[in-house]
Length: 111
Image (tube, rainbow, N blue to C red; front, side, top):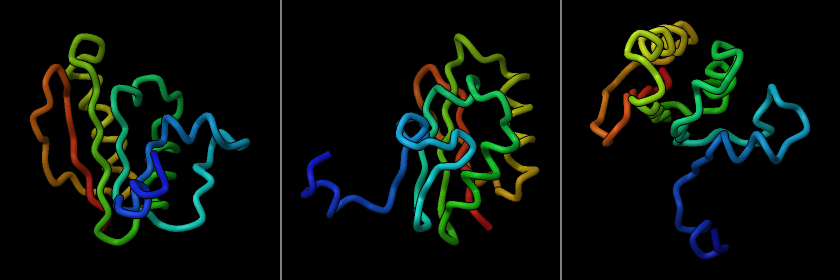
């Protein structure tokens, strides 16, 4: 992302990219809260989902959102439901499930 694009972008973060940029794999390493986090086709790879969603939640600004999308061809509806339950147990609120082709989705909000 160019510095011009960064300056005009909302305060967003992509955890998959962050997983490769910080030394501590359990922390995102952010210095400020963000408004939006996208986890696209990757949560099923996370070993400790509760810790992952807790870390995401702790880095959201009030009213911030997390959009999670998982591939339908790889993640079962039952497994995705378990992921939703884990995310909700961290204090996030489910505020939608937008349609994304080939994906199971959840839009969470920090409360």
